[in-house]
Length: 392
Ligand SMILES: *Cc1c(COP(=O)(O)O)cnc(C)c1O
Image 1 (cartoon, rainbow, N blue to C red):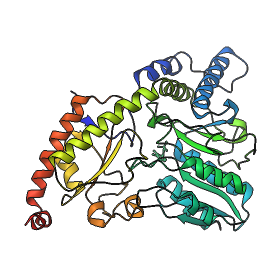
Image 2 (cartoon, rainbow, N blue to C red; image 1 turned 60 degrees about the vertical axis):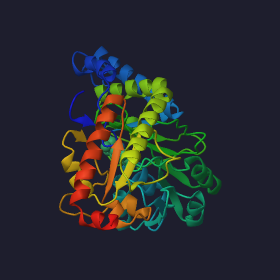
Image 3 (cartoon, rainbow, N blue to C red; image 1 turned 45 degrees about the vertical axis):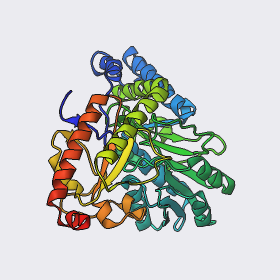
Image 4 (cartoon, protein in one colour; image 1 turned 90 degrees about the horizontal axis):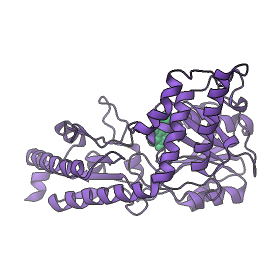
């Protein structure tokens, strides 16, 4: 067993060695610019990019021409939100999103608000899911975009995307979905799900960092975007800049692997995740699950250990790479905006830990994690006046 044991696969995943192998030629001899039309270096690179584009499109149920390569999901989200605002919203259009979105969406919305866009943030249910009826109720005649994430990065909760897509389609409003966590882990189909724009990231599915994509629907309806990066007119004018050829090749290889292995991997990881959960619940009392267990990514678990400060717990678990999932810096100990949106009390939010299992985790590692967490929680609870008081 290699230590530290990596259980933070929602933050990023290791590069699959098979994706690296596919990338190697393009990091060495095949260094051409995919936009070079006058020689074979360019042709080889362009062919590799188009193969990558097909793999990404296939995993989303899209056509290759609908994939725009970017530097990652953050950039894709910025392009989707600001790009549609630029075309569809003069001053005063409305964008609808949810309280549990990633900062890449929420901060982009804040930036759009400064430009005169109205933003409605729909609350979520106590299980962390967005109610499609709440989205329907929030729609106004001037709404140009609904942006709801596919699956949450902290609690792994999967939204009723297909129902939300149907609501948007019924009202003629564009639907953007941040699928950085869900893509490659659960089946996604932009047609069946009624998605018009889909943000994707390679490093969350065992591909390389610094590359991602935005799916942009081409028919029924054709989505138009205002480019946010101008230059040589790459990616059909939607995103200029020399393409990251090795990154795109690695992204494509990662998508092909996910497509072939998704079902088997999901059942293997959910079995390990369920074993982790039941063993922790057996060994420790007052363990709470945050968010729906039924509608959850197969590799996610988010637990609160009553009486234990999660930062102290992570500190005590030096040889386990875990996270609270919230992007709180050490200076501000605000509880996660996601747990707060679920109505999780502050005490429980401060004791929340995210377990993110991944392709390369073994059963032995999970058993080791159980032992270490149980030991550390017991030790910290002995020191906790709040927890001790509750026990007497
Ligand atoms: C990681 C993540 C992002 C940002 O993706 P990058 O490719 O790292 O920019 C956006 N949304 C969610 C839900 C994520 O998990």
